[in-house]
Length: 157
Image 1 (tube, helix red, strand yellow):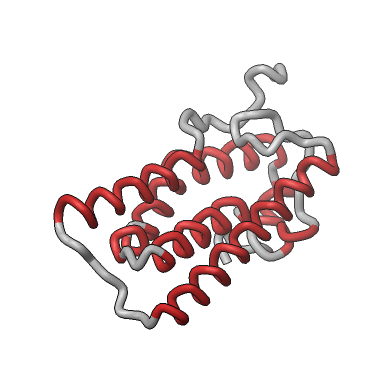
Image 2 (cartoon, one colour):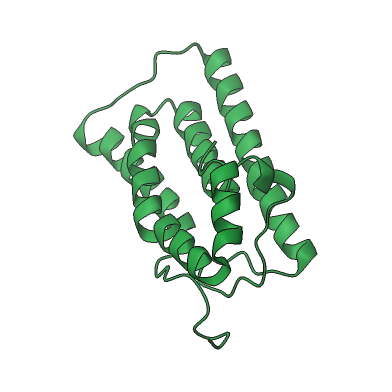
């Protein structure tokens, strides 16, 4: 395999799925019917802040680890080694989990139930367009080493 073809068959940037879901949630709230979240303002802001900060921390931790070891975090690029340290000891997909938490924070902060309700659909889409391709690629490339890692660390949380 050459480096040009050595990567997961991910064709659509996963962060855009989260952005599209937030935009769709906003449109549904505005054009279809409101799906408000019945939380006090202080609770809403607190939950939104905690979810968003945790999501940012997960994404930053994973991204920083990739940069420190010299790997490109883009899922369609070559993976020279399995990353199993840092946050990757807890979840195999901290960037996707982190982006879901940020989406949760945005939805709760905006009191938009649509944005929150779309999270399971987004995770299904992320699995379909990215995770399954990434896992298949890593299994082909690293074989038993990746299977051992996969058995010991959960996909999401």
